[in-house]
Length: 637
View (cartoon, rainbow, N blue to C red):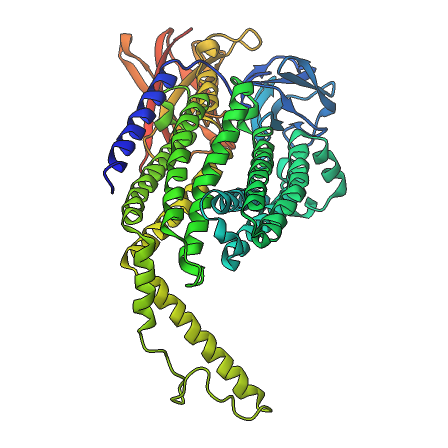
């Protein structure tokens, strides 16, 4: 690492810590993914009379379709009528049939949040008295399954295509203008355009099924496609396709007219025009993501969207330029090697991009997390920590690359070429050179064999020329390592864009564990206790809700509901409950409830002998070895 690199890296690290700390210290509530924050009837309630409608309240406005909310009776038949409608703000309701029978009803919802991601879940309530239900696996499959996996892969390819297209073109214009005439670099940038275009079309086709049925058979449903085109995400994808048409013209000029220009003044003017046009097209493509995803919702969208655009452009300049440099180092002809000056220019461009990533990334982290605890307590925070670690590794490897760059000189390359030229040329298996007699002109097989031999000899010569300079060889190895880490980093970043932000997850958990329900329900007289738990293992967090009716001395009916932090039913392997009246040294009285449906257990005839302040303890087991016991006191009788 040269003398100026270490201070720069130290400054970069200090800036990251300072900005992140300042932003997180001033965090305030906000949301991105929608989360269910309330319902009527509520989860687990036993209503005395049948409700006329079911209403759901989300943390933000959501998009609904005809089948977004379904209410199923104990036999699994739908009892809702009409389509869900907005009641007020972020609350939506669907009407129910009259004369509903007693029993347990299941509510499923499947909506699209303002940041384009599908949000689905389910819960149960009862009328008169709980009952068994045939409804199982009630959570809709939108956003998951085969279609969900294909959609995630399409997003990865689209990000990769954009990075290669924008970053590769930036590398040519800003760092190595001679590279516009190198066939390998041309193929790389054109490949980025093809990948981004194909992935955008694929996402447009998948979008309808991804947010509704989750069925691959619906990918080519024209009605669904028509609905997608009317959404914000559909408009963003169509805008991206239109911008890609402009990008195709840019690529054609860059690798066509630009490479043929020889007049210095004309080439300088064309370089300026291509640079301006390229920045406009690249910013437009980046905006097609910002306008439809996390940046477009929640806190400060007017600032978050341009910050997101800058973030994507910085990623493309760094990682896309890195890919172009790697291609040039490995595939450029020996007669057109990438100059040391071009490598140094890219080093400066990459360092500026990293500075931009630090500033914009810190702001984005604050928006999506909001607290230090979200780094470790939410999946989004954990993925973000992995991303930060990968960026740190990437910066470290980049430091090694800068060291090799500092040792490069164009004269050493020329000397290396001279040394390589002194290496004896390879010969054909027959003992002659690659340019030997092709034999009988009519012998097509012999001619083809000699052509392959010539190509092999030429490839070996090109490799010797590239490897002759040990500094250039070291640079190639370090840049290859950078590219490998960058591939993993891109996968983590793609996962982040599809993950519920830490803010929203913690808000949903807080709503689920709110003590608001820890009292007597006016509708049913049942006592409801909410208790958050953490078994310490993978996927070990959630909320357990215990309902006791009528919560008095004698026989009681008990229902236990287990939810994930996002409000979805959590089908854990085992739940146990016990009651202890410590003041009179009674108990613990164990209860083993029966499993009714996903996330729901119940027990009849739970006998409590005397009135008092009872401790209700619940043991939740989430795996063979991970379990936790949580408790609350409640006045019973």
